Image 1: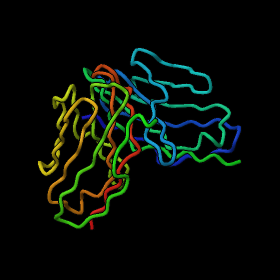
Image 2: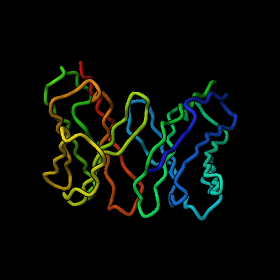
Image 3: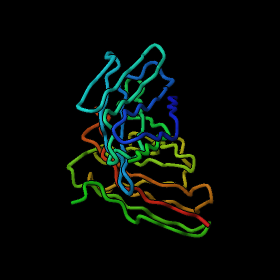
Length: 111
Length: 113
């Protein structure tokens, strides 16, 4: 089955860029997702990328996909304290849309 | 207006008891899920229902029984609770099965003593 790995913590200063990295194991994964979980809330889909794309940009968010290395990253430009949350990487194995999640990266933004 | 709501948010109970967690969504979705987040933070799918029919049943002990009385509800009943069942259980919904955009509830933290 699919395994998704990501580092558990990232600490940045307000205004800097944050880069959260993720690796997955199933090369047939078609859709790759980033979800955000704020304290006391459920996970929310932030963005996703289809496996035939290398990059997707959405305002302050940039997703990069290296399909050969099965590596996904999420870059948040001009990180704000309100971006502090847990970010989950997820991959949907081929033929399915249902995401398999990583453990989440806690992003801490210092003023 | 909460889109996906779970009750209770917190549940503390003794080993051997039977407990239920309820989930309701008001998004008009036809697919619902239960995920388990263990102490190491892995979030794993347990069950999925589409139009009240079970479509995913991962390797989960048969002490766990999901029930979907209608498309808007997916409840999780757990018999003979064990210490290892302690976790956060998340309910989610989506519009159909051809999407990875899941809408999650806030989670229900189950502690088994």
